[in-house]
Amino acid sequence: MADYETILTERVGNVLKITLNRPERLNAASIPLADELGAAFYDLGDARAVVITGAGKGFCSGADLAARGDRSPLEQKGGSHRALQNHYNPLVTQIMRAPVPVVTAVNGAAAGVGCSIALAGDFVLAGKSAYFLQAFVNIGLVPDGGSTWLLARAIGRARATRMMMLGEKISASQAEEWGLIYKAVDDAVLLDEAMALATRLSEGPTLAYSTMKANIMTALDGNLSQVLLAEAEGQRIAGASQDAMEGGMAFLQKRKAEFKGR
Image (cartoon, rainbow, N blue to C red):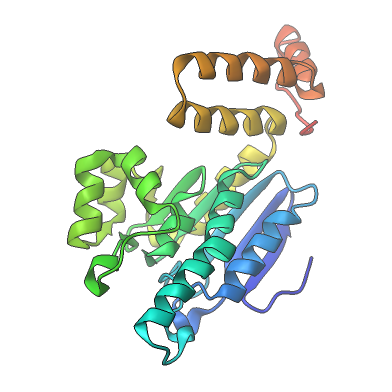
């Protein structure tokens, strides 16, 4: 595994576990952290699932505002635009378009761009003490890092507006009730549950998962005709895979399929 300064990586079977590792800053997403997380996704190797979590008491408290120093508001705004375009936005895109399933295990705060990173996962698990926060309104800014798109599609206009304009903390249990996340679990078992889910996914048909992810994105933004075409093309690609052949044989032989991700 590569050596990083702001994240930790560990291979567990076919799962790549990534830990945001700036606990003294509640894992605030500095530009180096965003770049290192992006590099880890760029170099997945033969990993067939990913888990992202945070070290210490928080998942990610948002962009690292303290790292901007004492620059003027105008300089800070320009810096934010560059940071989003060159670092944070590409990172969120990488996570969402990863060719393998991504599970985020949210411990503590997931705020600002940290909320975006958390919600970019295919499966979001959160400890019951965790919360999701869009606090931009408190400093006169707007949600970024894809938050507007993620929230509006996951929980609808009214609830997205509530989170963004009122800046309220949304608990893990509330997030589960709204359908914002997959599941809220006891803090003590969060990482175990996330790893168990990722392990299950890592033993599945990886190419089919990748195609499903792409088709879901098409469904969110496209029309029925586009989705039908994407599904047909995806079925052609998946149908030619070794995993599809294994799945068919396993069905006929009444046994559990042993997928290899090919």
